[in-house]
Length: 280
Length: 280
Image 1: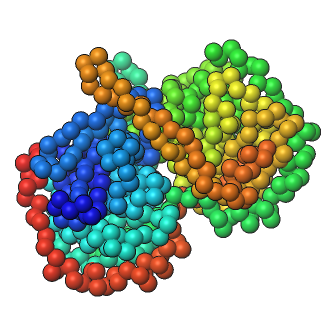
Image 2 (image 1 turned 90 degrees about the vertical axis):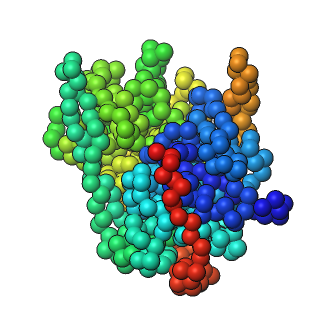
Image 3 (image 1 turned 90 degrees about the horizontal axis):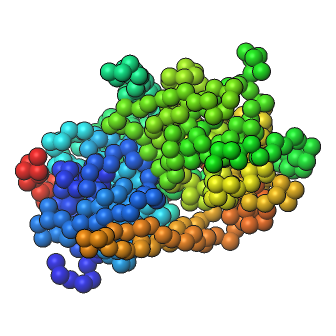
């Protein structure tokens, strides 16, 4: 594996460097190129696309992957990708794989996911990128099927590349590998979390709130990731980081009288901002 | 303003409840409905779509807006929106406005922005939502122009609504109000941060890293937010939280031999996950 022509593969996640899922992912891709791991030193689930702006970051060499070069990072998943490129690899890797996440990142979950944000950060950098997630939150989940498809998909991306401006969100049902029905290219289902906060009181009588909730899928489409996953398929959603609702631009130009809104503005009463000064 | 038919307007931000920007925003919308503020109790810039999963949250009544109902929250901007709906408003407000951010959230910055993530969370909940950002990071920036356009746009959304599945990302040039050229509906420019981490050593000789970087716009399109802002316009980008790259689905179905990939899988060597067990 000392071939200089082999691709460099950056591996990261959001569950932290000790999570079984990232070990399954390293095993999945270790024969496809030179693997370098840069992962958070603690769990970072739900961090979304957070970056560390006001604290310095630490990197520490890790030996948890044996001979494979690995570092633990004090920051978020997105920080890991940024630091890896600038301070460890000193170049763009040929592929960035993130995960395998303990738990689903299908449909709307992509928005909250540190796993997918790491992949997205790589995508923004122009690095072919993919996030993998297994539909099982357990520490001792069986990653065999997920690892199997992670290898196939990583190999496919290394061979065929990805369309510009896209990355992949891959979710794998929690099934034995011989019961997985294969891969389906999907769109993100219209779904969301119906949250409820559980209210409790601390010993001093002050309330505090724990997030709870249930996932609700409003989308019965058979072209969605939720449908694929419910039917034993590995869902592959092409994802973009251009968040523009392009179809809506014409709507606004037609239905908002932009010129009128813009030009009447001198008639509108404007509060001065003087009252802010006392905020220090 | 005790009219029960008036709309409820939720105001939040990511710079925290004491930031001048959120005070400018409250002033902008206070005559348009019943305003309720739920904002972080500390700055939360760069938090992206982070949510608090493993800690309880606190809410505390605040009097920094005088007669206007306000709460400070221990969580992220997204937490503020979720908690506001479930524990304070007990319903969906008619509008959620976020900001006014101290600093730009144009183009790729939307991905990292707590301000925009709060607006996006409201959008996911089906609440018409908009984030406002002024192109000036300073604490004592002049919000007059931003406040003026925030009022116009909030009013427009209350009157005309937004297309389903969209929210707005509004950025305002740092110019006196009479030099702003009006509103432009735009797409997100293709731009990114070129990061460099500054490396220093602590007193014990161990390295640490500070994020620095410069913003690079690769997109000369005159239909972009960057163009609009450079030319004195308020940029309004319709944003969606369906991250599917819909145009790429056909590409993958055509160019990836999905069936072959899926069906050859029994021939691929699979590493078992037994070695993970010792990670505890």
